[in-house]
Length: 227
Image (cartoon, rainbow, N blue to C red; front, side, top):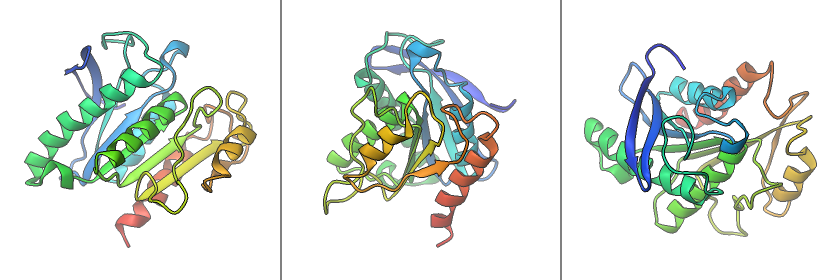
């Protein structure tokens, strides 16, 4: 993402996981995990939307971690339809949360956590948030951009009167998305009910609108830090 981005490989459930890490100059506020789009359709940690999400969270003072999913770049294993990818993201959470919490003098469970994903990555991020909630681990922020609700069973973010998957949830979708139609996302969101921020004129990859996307994510989530 920039010249200060660190790339390394971490041992995961089925082999090495390649990650890109960006750390703010000041002591980090927390940890943000960013999930990229479908690995069988060109998705990598260098995807522009994934990088944009990382920039937003870096601007908010978070240490950001973007993995390559199984079979992409230097990551071992093969595509697993979201199951193994969720397991890998969970393994990275435990690894980096423990290291960062120790650096900040916190318990790992007390470290502020943000999850974000684009398209297939939004499905994986939501699945991890659901798993963590079941384990009693709170998620501060969850951002889903262009969630792939057509091809994957993206978990409901709100279930009746029960707690949502994160303290603050943001769903953003492009008005002119031709990969995941806006109507499908609204159909997924309506029963929950979950608000959806619609970016006028945006396609699936937010070409020409990445800066407004970053600004909205950082402004919306940043408002919680200034409350």
